[in-house]
Each structure stands twice: as C-alpha cells, then as structure tokens.
Image 1 (cartoon, rainbow, N blue to C red):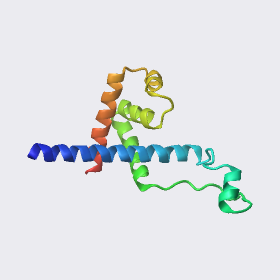
Image 2: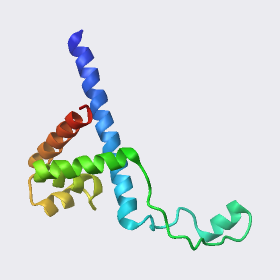
Image 3: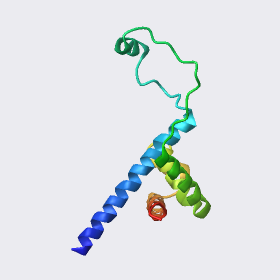
Image 4: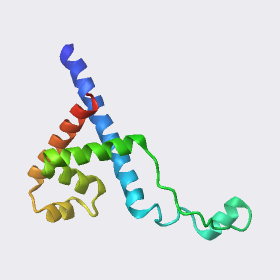
Length: 131
C-alpha cells in the first residue's frame, strides 16, 4: 500500500518536472528569438479573421513573462554551477535543434550517458523545487 502511494507521488513529481521543463524550453525559445518567429496566421488569414485591414504595431515586442519558466531557468543555471554536464544535457534536450541522434553528436556522448545525465538533472531539480 505504501509502495503504491510512493510510486504515485514519484510519477506526479516526474510529470511536474517534465511540465516545467517544457514551459522553460518554450519560454527560452521566445526570449532567445525575441518572439519574432513565423506568424501563426498569414496576412490574408488575419484580414479574414479580424474583419479588415491589419496594421502592424510599431511598439517593440515585449519579453514574455512566465514565473515557472524563469524559476527553471535560474535552477538550470544553478545546476550548471554544480554539475555542468547535466545542465548542458538538459539545455540540448529541451532547447536544442534536431532529433536525439543530432543532439548526441553535438554533445559527443553515448545515449546511455545522455539519459543518465538527464535523469540526474531532473532528480536535482525535483529536490531544489521541493525545498
């Protein structure tokens, strides 16, 4: 009975860490690109949906605010001071380009080592978040 309860808690913790890392990756991509990626709709689509001429704002884009993502960014930076290889693996996995084989080539490490570093990083993050 206790083992099942502990397993549920561990799975919930793992889902929470994964959710936070995905938010961090999305936020980081927006910050690094200045949120100036491809538009979600074409100009014709915007005219059709908005019912008229579309004017472009001259105001510079605002940096996105996401407290969870910013907390994770700080924690990943803190992890880098402690265990750089784990922080690098996290950055490559969540904010890197390409598939897993391209990421492994970029890091020049075997997949087993990469997976272990990701797992270690997630465990460290889980410990820091619950403090």
